[in-house]
Image 1: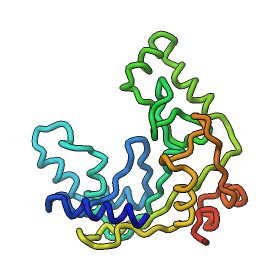
Image 2: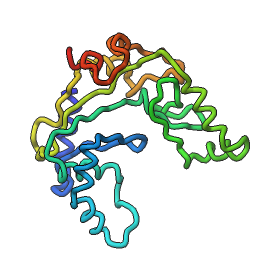
Image 3: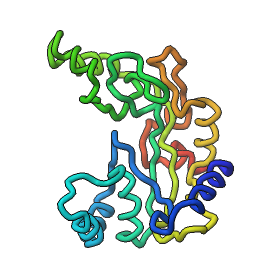
Length: 219
């Protein structure tokens, strides 16, 4: 939204020079990249030099996922298409109901974080068997005819400089608007008893990700 962009640009202006410009970052649960992006990043020396500058430190001093945007800004020259799956499709395998926007898995889940650090999840596996957390998730993620929403698509220019008014370009803004109006907590969660949403163009296209109309690009 325009309000979200203004808020992000305001935060960018408050960042120290070394933390500008702000860049997108993948989530911990899933980071899927095209082969072209993998080759470009793999052939770039900047990430290796950045890590070498840490010396003997074994861990990143901040969120390692946040560094991916920095590295992309130093390694990529062409625009990158970002596909945001939303919390409707990314869930942790929590022992309880979780907390928003972290809901338990449902039959709309695409990516599952097994959340192996969860104490209660480890206790469940210890008492009932290591397969129980997986079996429970498998049952929740059984086959469904629900479609939810296609990913929200954005174009990101890795050469963007701090202060530039265009942060991202929305490629299917109508889908983003409908998702926001329907799933106000960042996602729709049938596992919490909420109604499963239906994206008709996705159904009519057969769900093919290359279909422009299904992705909302033809709107």
